[in-house]
Amino acid sequence: MPPKIFLETHNISNRAAGLGTFNYELVKGLSALDFKDYELILNTPEPDILKEEFKAKFKYHKYNSLSRHPLFRVRKKHDLWHSVNQNTKVEPFSCNKYLLTIHDVHFIEEVSPDPNHRLNRLFRAKLEKSTAITYISEFAKSETHKNFNVPDVPEYVIHNGNPISTVLDTSKYITNIPVDRPFFYAIGDFLERKNYQSIVNMMRHVKDFNLIISGNNDKKYGDKIKQLIADNGLTKRVFLTGKVSEEGKQFFMKNCTAFLFPSIREGFGLPPIEAMSFGKPTFLSNKTSLPEIGGEASIYWDNFDPEYMTNVLIEGLHDYETNKTEREAIIKKRAANFDWKRTAADYFDVYTKILS
Image (cartoon, rainbow, N blue to C red; front, side, top):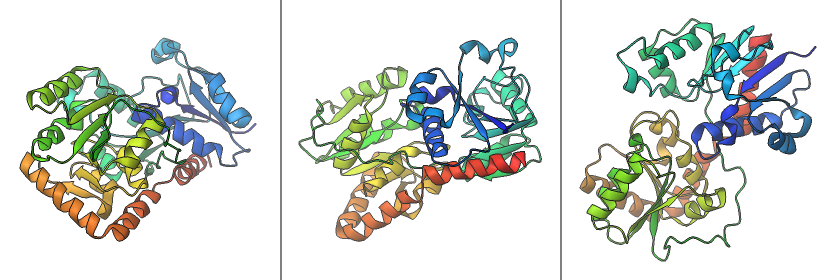
């Protein structure tokens, strides 16, 4: 019997979020590999949809929300269980080997210093039963070691790939957001850590451009940003699109003057890589994992004073336009460093090492 590897990928249907993207792109990358000597099982709420795309390449286990509770955990034994998200409550009843992928430990800022908070206990339990651990960035690894006792098991840093593997034709994309003047673009979930208020405040000093932000703004932080836009008299220059399709995202990235990502907490940060695929200048905060991802191809804000941010932006755009051919090549080369096929191959290599 071939070794059975269970991938806890129940978030795979939520492609609008980073974890959903990670789940899907990892599975898609694995599907390109030859693993006939292994049986890979995907945990998913919609097996038929994945079967239609990946056919018999994988086996499929239908996710049931009850499996988040200990009494109803998956009881079928597998040779390896891959917990692809450190926060998932879906755990095996028992397993021979356990691989934990850590994206970030941001939750400690909310639950620390209570060691008995359920998120701390859940995470420590995952660490303690891990046969091996993978991290999506060196930053995620260092933060985990700084805040937790990590067991003496093999550890690997495997960077995420670039979700934009296919460039779409966006010439027929229609939006009700005005794009008749140059604009900056940002995308991500509307959470406090995304720090969108900094770029909204900056726009008071940037008169010749608009700002467009995509993502689910139907939440408390979205309301805060909407109010900030109104209070600053920017309703005709700063626009929120809500969630956008893949076509919409690529349309805005292709046509923006620059991509802005001022997040103050990221375990990785996929959107900057996507924007760099199109050769766009990317302006990032210098916090957490972002310098590791953007490298020398991106430009960084050290603080969020609006006038300072404006100066960095204007100087960066001037340098980009002055040396456009060279800068564009550097930016695209950086994006090309992140490839999901290579990422998936690295994960599969970890599988084989654990099971050998």
